Length: 155
Image (cartoon, rainbow, N blue to C red):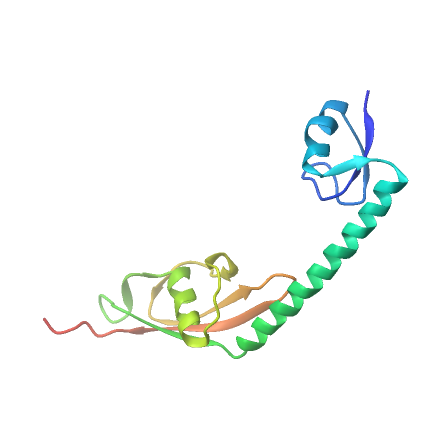
């Protein structure tokens, strides 16, 4: 026997917010209901879902506005990173997402998470590369990274 549940939030492998799904009574009673992920299919639950969706839409609009402000501050971003090389071309180590995020923070004063940065791979040679920053809500900023040879200090 299965019961109908109104999903109040997206649930992996079950459905999206607002859908009515059939689930086992124990799953509904022991997981979905206590977590606030679903409710019984009633008119009150439907009204509560509409209110939740309106609040989520308002929050998403505010987050997108903030992301657009950050994107505006990162417009025409170009980062230069100096690194030690073995032969003037190949780096001793590599330049990773953490190094680039730190350079962006120093350059523009914008705090980012490493997970927001999209690199094809770690950068291991001198040259120019392209990368992007995903600020969420379909706001993506593309920028250039230039890696220069840092002259090794004289011993």
